[in-house]
Amino acid sequence: MSTFMANKANIERKWYVIDAAGRPLGKTAVAAAVLLRGKHKPEYTPHADCGDYVIVVNAEKAVLTGKKPEQKYYRTHSGYVGGLKETKYRILMQQKPELAVRLAVRGMMPRNIVTKDSLTRLKVYRGEEHPHAAQKPEVWNVQ
Image 1 (cartoon, rainbow, N blue to C red):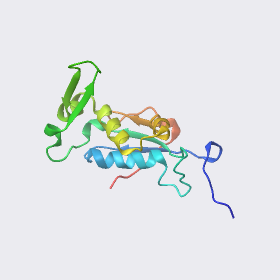
Image 2 (cartoon, rainbow, N blue to C red):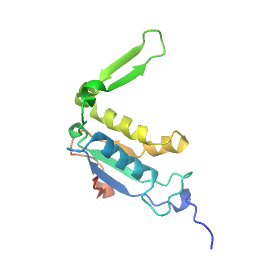
Image 3 (tube, rainbow, N blue to C red):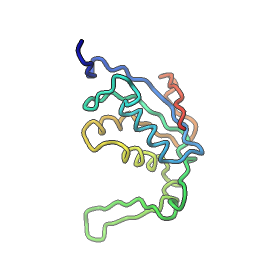
């Protein structure tokens, strides 16, 4: 008997919906990262992209615990002298909650080429509505 190895020909991808309303941002990001990598499947293969599609709804209602809204910053740098831009997460969650969720999920993923392909299957929406009803997504419960 040989060991099963996942590849593009034998991967079956499903669609899952994660509701971020009232849940910590980190716990939601962990659940999304596990689904994107495919670690919940028995045929998981670390070097192959065998994950599923993930839809995160209610991103604006995700919660940051403790003092993170005031002490945590989103930083970008243009590459030029004095090009550092900082935004508190409190403001980021008000203006661009989709970006905050996407950054949290990206931080939970490994730094390799499989991650780049996996993050294209992450769909994040500010509210309850999403245009993926035709794919019949299943609800994934986050503990």
